[in-house]
Length: 111
Length: 113
Image 1 (cartoon, each protein chain N blue to C red):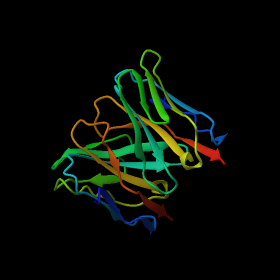
Image 2 (cartoon, chains in turn green, cyan):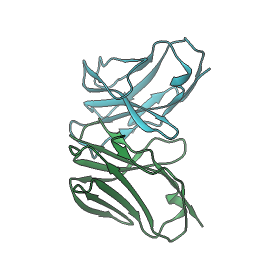
Image 3 (cartoon, chains in turn green, blue):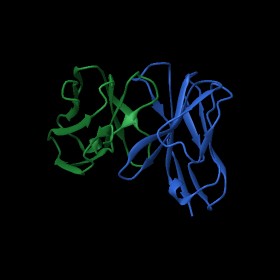
């Protein structure tokens, strides 16, 4: 079983809809949870970061971590065409560069 | 304001050739690493370094070598390129133990024919 599972199926939503993305993981040592956004032919850029369990909100973005279920989520409210990108979940045990990534979700927001 | 700089951006190699992907950061970060990104596979860690002179293997190290002679530079060497190494390569850097400030380069697209 891969350490981090993320359903890579493309997701198309109309502008203004809520986008819901999630990942599951198997390594209970993971404590640092991140969501990266990656535009076509660009490097990943950090979108949200959460340490341990709980919720974090930043503008239209909300990240949730449930360590008891080994499940993390990202919600994008009032989605915009500029949100069209691939979203990658990533996590690590000790906060350094040794990240385990999900496969990524391609999101398309249709105007 | 360079951040993490990777060169070259695009490269085509013949099977068996060797080459080096360059990575440089100007943020005085201790941690640097190399990932490869393949369709349907996500990003996978190749090698990483926690400081000058210290390197270690990641998830998929075979066929790659690294060295870290300075804080700024972390080159990735392909010893004898194989078609399976066709991929997009990303270099990343961060301060020590700071999972929330990992910066990625723009990527290097490598095709091995």
